[in-house]
Length: 343
Image (cartoon, rainbow, N blue to C red; front, top):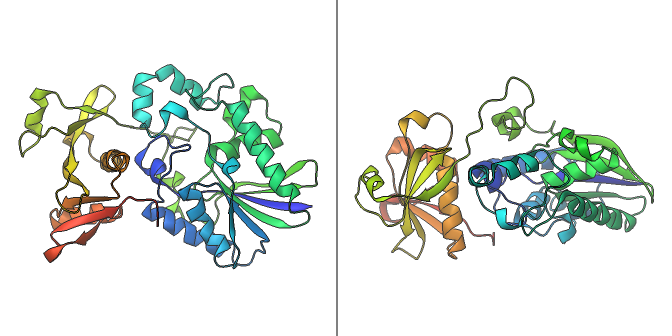
């Protein structure tokens, strides 16, 4: 009998910035690294014979919490990737809902007839993940292996093992980042022993504890996902420094919620956030991080691996520090964040 630990990656940019990340490659967040440390402690006394991960940064980085302490090598397999979301990749959830509301609803219901534009449908994804896990398990009879994968594919595999009918796929719960599912494989059939367990995570670092979109009870609150558009001329007065050709308006539904002014910096070819703000009526909802996420997306697509911003007032520096910015430069006159995928 083979024992399989199927583990979701730690909190990544898509989870934090509220963006659609399937095959899109993204970094682990500051909180995600704390989750990896907790996962490492959980597996400290569990014997593992082999470790596999999808070939994306967020799974390979999460897997370090298991394979490095145990002195094992990491084997990558693209079959463990998240669902291929095609043309939706790296769009914000707010943009998808704004432009394709009906398709977004079908996607959220795990509708078996839904397919990502130029991507996968749920059947294709399910066939891929089941075939991959079966193939890897057959290579390790009577051993214990750890597989690092992604939220949607793990849910789909659980649905298949539990023989959940397609019209009930939406009922399979969502797993926290670094949630652990334990399966058995006898050479033919899978069994489930543990499903999406996050008991190693203190509530303070649990991703799902800080979000409510996944809840099905009365504790669910309104999930505000922004989308972005260029500013029109009359909106440029919102930017205190005057005209900026790269001024972007953050939209909450049909209402402006904030602005972002970003450009390629003259210093070291980095991307620069010149200004960002959430309007007063939308504050207190933790929306500012989505503006940072928009800047990360734009600059990374331009081939840049760093973001800089003029050092803000001391009371604002703590806000940026929690998202990976550090003071740097002569006299610590600016803050900087690395956004590359090579470390």
